[in-house]
Image 1 (cartoon, rainbow, N blue to C red):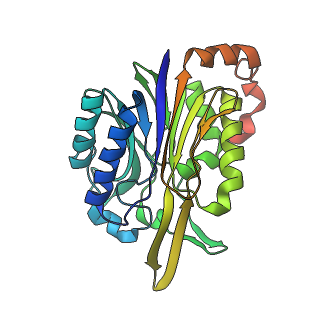
Image 2: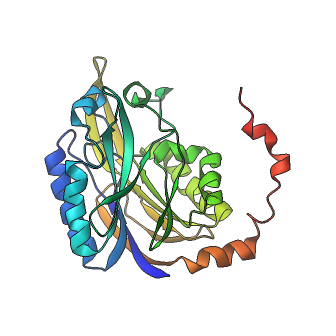
Length: 285
């Protein structure tokens, strides 16, 4: 099945949900002009990444006000939309770094809670307290849609090849990947994602945030920058389309989900797996 997908690479106004939502609505209108059927926003696009404990006040249930607003646009344009946002959990005081999948009928049909949270306190000048704010999600899921089987991973999840392989084995044909990766990780961004697309023979729609966020970390002035460079990859790990770095951008590419089965047949990478040899990586310590 052929259709167009888009990375909506945006910068955020830290903690200003209304400003960020307005920008997201505008970007969806722009993507719709190119007949996009699946659009992906960056990680925590609604709030920005570095809100710290303010994420508690900014979080919303999914479905909720933001997904309803995005849903109205999704319905207007006949589009699936993946939006990164802080989710208010069912347990009071528990929040998640999440992504919602909104369908063309305007309804949330799925959500994913980031399962691997970053904690960087000793990596150059990068400070990340994500583990102090959010609870980890506990499920790697694939969602059936009329466009094909869609998986969702978020940022740090990409550093664990087991996450990609798991959703491949669950039937993913397309993986949407919201992120907020800094410039120091550029070498990983391109190399890692191309390898995962090839090894698992699926499309990856990877949307990275762009811009700088200034914030306080326990009285320390800190700054987080994301470099953009969003990419759309085919099942052979080839970059179909790539976005500009260090500025907002929208990239659109046509994909064909029939290529997933075709390339898996050609490479034999999933057929020739030897699970009996891999037991070591599944041991619980």
